[in-house]
Amino acid sequence: MNGPSTFPQRDGAALFQAICQGCHQANAQGAVGAAAYPALARNIKLASAAYPVYTVLQGRKGMPPLANYLSAAQIASVVNYVRTHFGNDYADRVSPQMVKTAR
Image (cartoon, rainbow, N blue to C red; front, side):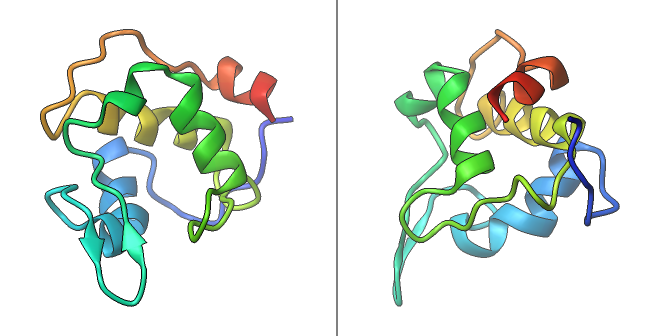
């Protein structure tokens, strides 16, 4: 199953801007206010590619699950973007197939 797509963006940066930065901030530094949004910048938890894939699919704490709103290719794209930007340098790429398997 590839999963539905509610968002038109396909590029990781565009998906981050449309979906993630509202909570995690444009610089991925996270925020504390009505809720706590963890920093994605320089985040050691992103070293394991499976961690952000499962988090995007299933949600975590205050983050809603996005499995019903993004295709496998979109999830792979945004996870790869976050894992290679904001001071993160994790070279192993997430594939759409990996996301499909995790679904």
